[in-house]
Length: 480
Image (cartoon, rainbow, N blue to C red; front, side):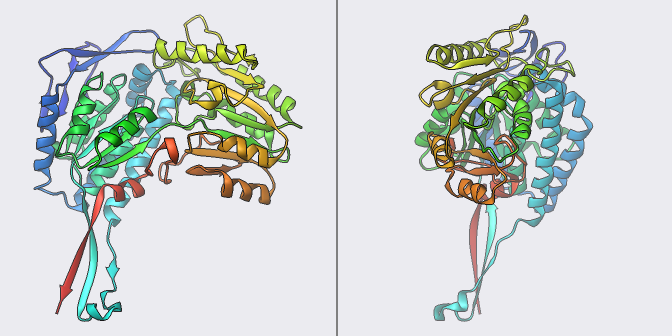
């Protein structure tokens, strides 16, 4: 694994060999204190051509399923052994609190573990051709074969585990990958690739890293004629533009959300407040399923709001490398200023600032609770992607479900209730990819079919489901 203390340009695996680049470099800056964490090459479209060409060549020497599984198993061990090192790197380049970064490393191990299981069990099915007279004397079955070269475009907010959710299923499926990590957080992804190639036995032709900002490298990947599948996690605007630019490719999109949670008066609203303390503010709210819209029955709204404010006010804000820190900086000052402006705009339009809404002495936006919000406010209608939750009250469950569904997004939603009929109403009528009962919408297990509807995307992640997206069915017919 490369060290970054000297701030030399970190080498990439590209075209089957280590690559440092001969042009400009990209500085990776800590969002918390603006220290220089490291540098990576600013790749060119020609580097993308080279990576895709070698990846295409790799398909002529396929990896047997048992080899894929062994590589993935070794990856689990290698990542676990470097838990603290990887967590520190995540904390430095993403300003994710170190305690949360360690959890991300643990989740990445789980993601690789489930992908290993898929590599060992991926199979087709027998087709009963003789169920029709034309098929008499014939035997049919299907095989799952790699779809081809995968272009993986990853976001900044989970620089290890969301990269794992793209690379691990691709390895399980037998697909070579060209990875473009987020330009703000490339170092963790590069460290993972180093582990896979240097220590886990993955042939270097099967995994390549291209780095760059401004859309040049991403566009080169999207437009490349020999890329077969694009997997993208990020903003809806960028995601759907990729889908439009690549109509002949398979494109999987995991996009945004403004996750709602309904809290019924018969539900355990104290538990809900305790869970939202972190679910709304972990990694400064920079998660697609960060709890954002809190819909509370009017009979408990005052008590719930007071309890939540008490919980949120106790969050420790500060240096991501401090074990006590629970919330740190947003990914950039530009994002911090945007979120602050949305808070100010909501207050100007009648929302009540219950806590937060200011910067601490280090420039970190303090976790913020707004109440008496209305749907037209940006903090309700859009995805905040910051340390803000917005509380609104309702009179009936029908009203709450309508309020939750009043969004262009559809990733995950939740309800707290003790009534079975209310729970069934919620999961039958909430128009989201996932509905959780007596849990926050921020909860995710890495093996679940994770994905949404409408502006939130068009696919399901989780190794078992991603592997099937990355393979195609081949029919085999045997005749007498």
